[in-house]
Every structure is written in C-alpha cells, then in structure tokens.
Length: 200
Image (cartoon, rainbow, N blue to C red; front, side):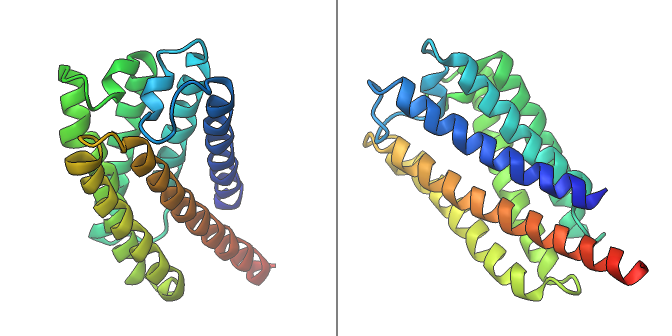
C-alpha cells in the first residue's frame, strides 16, 4: 500500500509542476517575477490553476497517511498536513482565498494558519524522521529543505510581496517542496520494497 501511495505522491508532484508550467505557457502576459499561482486563477486558464490546487492538496493528504513513525513530531505534522490540505481544497472552490494580498477572511485564515501550518508541519516531520530508525541520512537533507522553505516563506510574506518579487519567492518554494516530497516519497517506497523483499 505504501509503495503504491508513494508512487501516487510522486505522480502528483509531477502533475502539479506540469500544471504550473502550462499556466506559464498559456498566460504568458503574467510575469513569473511578480505573479503568484492565485493570479492565474483569475485568467481563462483558471481550471488548470484549480487542478494544481487539487494536486497540491493531494500530496500532503497522502503524506499524512503514509509517513512512517509514530512520534509526537511526525503525528503533529500529519495533523497539520491534513488541515493544510483541507484549506487548499477550499481554495479550489474560492480561489481568492489563496491570494495573500486580498485581505479577505479566508485569505487571513490561510495566511495565519494554513500556510504556516503546512511549512511548520514539514519541519516537524523532517525532525521527527531524523529521530526515526533508518531515516538518518535522508532526514538531514529533508531538515535543510524544510527549514529553507519556511525561511523563504517568511521572506516572501514580509519582503518579497512588498517589492513585487512574490513570484520568484513562490517558485523557489515550490522547487524546495518538490524536492522534499520526492525524496520523502522515494525513501518510503524504498523501505516498502525492502520490507516486501525481506518478507518474501
């Protein structure tokens, strides 16, 4: 089961990246430097933006199911992943809530809880995996990626949005999250394969 779900996670990462690339190609009038993904939800390609939200939510919902370990850090991360996934799906139905610049109630909730919660969850899971047997090597990389992504999120919110570079920040964050999700899913898949081989 974990093997299958980890493959699905990798497929969702690829699908999200493909959707994001498609938005750039179809809506070339939007600048990648300043435009964030919610800007694409206001274009004729909004359905692709909505699909990308679904793909992104699916990644974290699936991780909540397949993450190994049962320590407090990982379990807390699981909960934060599920909360974030729910709010991302809400963003699919109400795209304006995904834009941190609107000031709407849902946007404020996203800014205060969902976005920080996801990134804090990623850090907690990474540290929790570092304490999990068999994850020492991968966890060092995951901790580095997660802390960098959280720092970049804070920089984006506090600085880059104000100076018109929010698009750059978001794209760098996505690159870090793609790396984190792919490494984690591959490690889970590898462990599942190893367990299956030993059982045979």
